Length: 136
Image 1 (tube, rainbow, N blue to C red):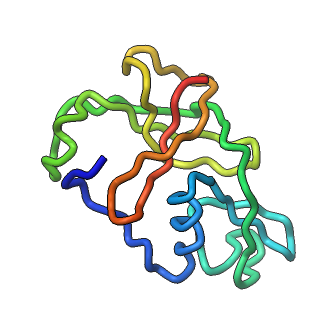
Image 2 (image 1 turned 60 degrees about the vertical axis):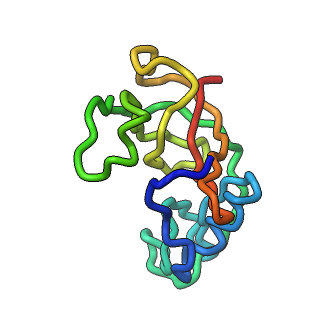
């Protein structure tokens, strides 16, 4: 899907690997080689021990809705208006991190805390895809 939603900056040095994998349909999580801490979103250092350059592991691509909100009106960016209503959720991955994402493929009223979800990748054009989750 190519539209006028803003694209993520895929050229930030510590984010590039994440966005390249997403474009290939893979969800990655950073894992620290020093302490084993896993994190999303990417960063140049481990948030637990501050070791530099955490590595990457493939995530299972599953999770559970930890919390969510229903978006029912567009505010600053009108490109999101056609999707209203939509869900923004914090999804807890089995690898440990939680990520903010959209829950798609169901009515917003059907989303609930604890709902099992699976990742899919929504193409935005220009070789960019974003991870979203649907009920499994």
